[in-house]
Image 1 (cartoon, rainbow, N blue to C red):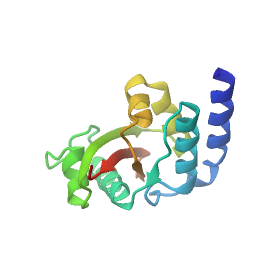
Image 2: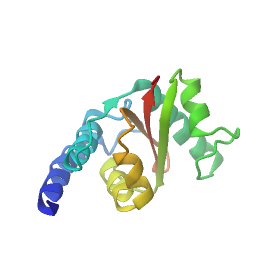
Image 3: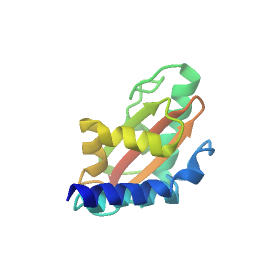
Amino acid sequence: MRRLRRLALVAGLAGLAGLAGQAALAGGGAAAQAWINTVRAAEGRAPLAVSAALGRAALAHARDLTRSGRFGHTGRDGSSVQDRVRREGYRHCFVAENIAKGQATPEDALRGWMASPAHRRNLLDPRAEAFGMARGAGRVWVLVLGRDGC
């Protein structure tokens, strides 16, 4: 099973090479989606769709972190991830956020999150149905996962 997971992870990571130079991933990007869904499938989880609203929330927070020089889940205005997705019209019943700083590529950020138990839990959460991912200046990465409506 570990070998299967490792092969699935390698296959998903291979698709991310072209994303490294993008300032923001459009809602998460097809390669990021393939990587995430490959990892989720290896763990018996349903695939995630790309959400433009979650991508906008991720990008807004990545830009806010870059501008403020801060690094955390609370926005400069005191906003939470719940507040930020609501601003984008996403009526969530589940939302989670992963942030990272310093990774050169989406692959590096995603690999780092998978190596962290709390971030891994977010990526594999069975309640998630969609995601958005963005990169801000200074190699700040934000991933927002959610379920709309419910």
